[in-house]
Amino acid sequence: MFWRQMWESHKGRLLGLGAAVFFCLIYLFFGFWNMLFCALLLFVGYTVGKHKDLGQGPLIPWGELRGWLESRWRPFK
Image (cartoon, rainbow, N blue to C red; front, side, top):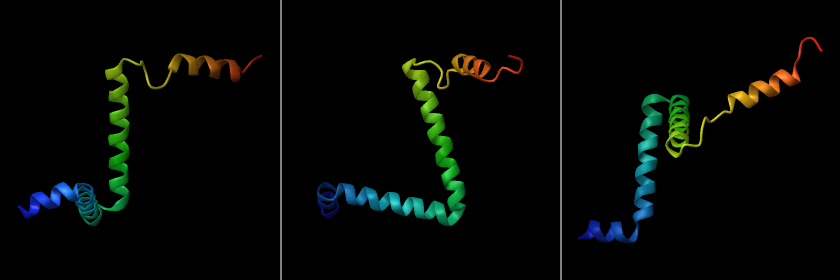
């Protein structure tokens, strides 16, 4: 009963504390920069997958970028 009351009244605090303990353990075992790099990879993967799921097209408009670069830097004008 005690744990159910604690969960109902302090859910955010308990989740925050659990997340902090989890990230502290990752930091202690794997290192801070490795953790940040892993988070970056997860974010990029999620963003690319989200764009694909929503059918928004490519994340970077390669055709427009190529056209802009060609008009910007013509070697022989």
